[in-house]
Length: 206
Image 1 (cartoon, rainbow, N blue to C red):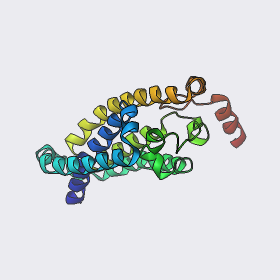
Image 2 (image 1 turned 135 degrees about the vertical axis):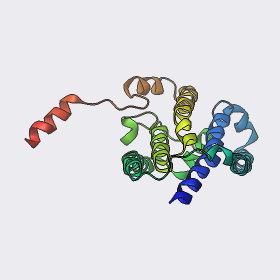
Image 3 (image 1 turned 90 degrees about the vertical axis):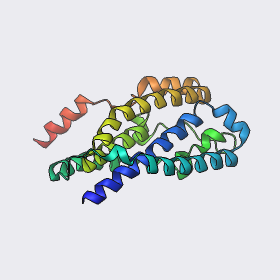
Image 4 (image 1 turned 90 degrees about the horizontal axis):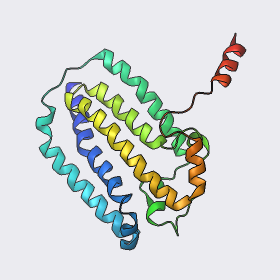
């Protein structure tokens, strides 16, 4: 189990930063990358991500020297965020094709134009992908029980918030007033709790 925890922690540290940097490159520089072209842009970024992941995996091993051992209690707690992350991932798959996860509609809006997503989970949250990712990393952190992964969590929360702001600016440019109305109605990360509906369900169950 100790070796499994170690390699899971190593994988998180190796692959999460390249994925985050990918979106920090795509969203702020979207006009530039559209001029570069879809296939060349993806090729440049995928090659860079693999190279960066390899370098990080070689250099970050000293960051994994502080760990707190295998904890059955924490592994059990990890099931909670893992469960909600999987639920979100399943709901996301109903609306997002694989290409959307890589930003193809943003890079080539003329050929891959999609309407503003407002149905399903997107009717409750504007950024369910980021929530799903964060919950997944929380689950991995509890499972791995490494100090570095715990430190990564607040850093990731700040980064995802900044990414959401950058993405919203691009969405406003693409959808205009339609997105303004949507963002005024739907929260970013935490769904609104409909107390009247919840109370009705409770009364109906008693």
